[in-house]
Image (cartoon, rainbow, N blue to C red; front, side, top):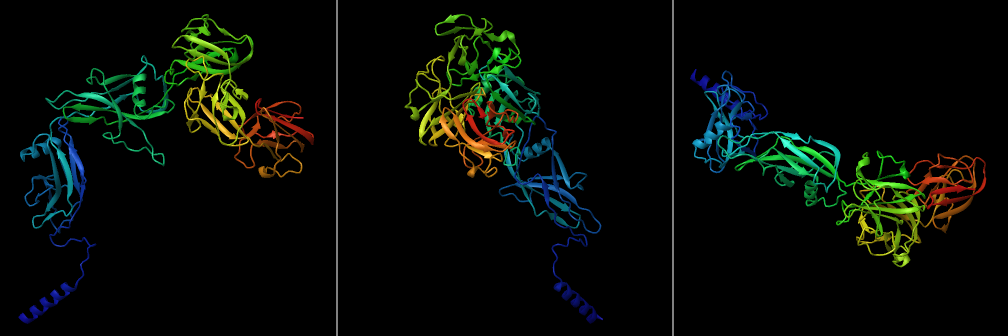
Length: 601
């Protein structure tokens, strides 16, 4: 009988020894425990214990260990020093929630702080720890094979959470006067409380640039390294609000990457509360988008004396004139009248003619009558609120450069397209440097003298004399457009003017809509192009300044009239083609870029 028992035992041991281990099989037999993993706080977490809110809870969580056949395990959270610590002799040990049964431990800031203090960690000191969890079902004890590193800073100072109140977060663009010391933003927030017996709380507003990734999603901000600038709250930081003038805010962002006043500032702001060594940022971060713009307007017979829809003047952004000097180039009929105004819709904000004084007119806020034009023409109207002077001068924007000997007394002029918009076709050799210039001199020391503009890059112009020069990079002619229609940002366009083609489906013997084979017009100077063509009736054409699509082109601005013998308005940013006459035949087409018209005879 003894031999039989030994035989059976031997067979069992052989079978057991031959069985393959299955690491994917977590089935528990007997009273064993299966390993489990930690969840939170994750490895690398930094816990700063805020003395102002001692009852705030921290949750330690982990996956449950699979129990044995009968007994569910109980858990302990254990922590040791990261360097040299031994989980067999833990620095800290806490029973899990629900008498140890839950796979979770909830500790308040104070409980964790008290435990660290009892182990000799000084107030305000930082402890680098690693933590894990033990499971115990009475017959089996298991330490989780995963350990997480955390950094805990003990109580010293603190400040309670608080919330922003205003300005409310918005991506709508606000326009502010960057020179104004009377207009302001009021930033305010709820108060933060210090820890019991701690230093009083002070505040400062933090500003950072709001940035988006390539998919248009907002990027997070590290407020420690990403803050552009900060502003202390009122009463040297004691108040829970700050009154910040438009000028102060503009000056601050100008000193931190936004020196170009034409740039839109897209900011995020929050508030930092400080009590002793503790810094507490608000739970919220608000958007604030704005443009820094000083505006002045023109109202008069040229626009029907509509104070609610005035004409915005160009703001002179030369450093010594910004916020003081404004101007416009405008065509006015004989007998035309006008005044300058500071505020849209406010008749009481005018600057009028208060009598001649030297080369200009004396003016002032809410004084004087209308300015009156005696002779029809294109005028540069200038208002200098710094000296209370206005200047009414017959001038228009032209070109001064290599192509005309840099003679400021004789700028090359072209067509007046509309207010603050000029087009000049200048002879060029492909490398002629030039500036836009209104003549007749190089003296620009005062607002009544000459003005000229150089290249600010990206199709923008700098103000009054800046370098570098622009370069007419095409020959034998270049089309140059000076654009001041946005009073806050002067721009230019430049395109080849070597040829002008008639393209469309309205010409006999010409491929339909084929720029490369379309007939070329003849340039006769002063912006005028001509050609004689056999035209089909009631078809379409347009004008293209090149032999391929994408070149500068002109479209119809007459409502697609097919009348002959009448000058019809044109446009270079439209979408309607010109209609050919109602009767087929041979016609002479004249395109005048300076008058912006086309005539079919």
